[in-house]
Length: 235
Image (cartoon, rainbow, N blue to C red; front, side):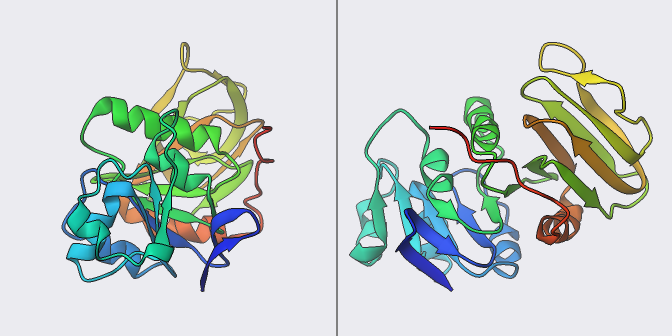
């Protein structure tokens, strides 16, 4: 069940929910996401794809500058949560106001590169909000302190640091033990899974990218108590 306006967040759910953006969405993305979650929230223009499919979002969060009035008129007023400031993206506005075990983001990858970079930056900034982004070829998430993934041997596992980070791994062809990963130095793209992959990182800032068909494995990993969570961002 999705509750609105509880405990200081706009959306509060005890089960994973989907968050839809107004970017590129594949033909199977909407059903794939909705079949795996408990509720559907839209970041501004992301409400259009949901409404076109016959689903009214449980909540719409954003500055409402990219959602046509024809769509707004079809959403109950008590499900609209405008945040008018222009200092953050609609993805940021939505993610920071959702409390759920996991958010599955759809419609945030692909399209303009600056938009994608802003989305990835938000994943790192809101490290206390577990979120997996669904792309055309991969899924992307911010690495928690520890995560273990059941991947297919040979799967590409790319690790990209948005800030300096160290850690350890098992099940990767090229382990990260003893390495310093940083955005202006060594990065970890195009690694490969040998079997079950376990990552432990000493601090936030590392994005993990695995094949799209590993989505269910990633969602199961986030459901594990062993995953752990980073503390909320100060301020």
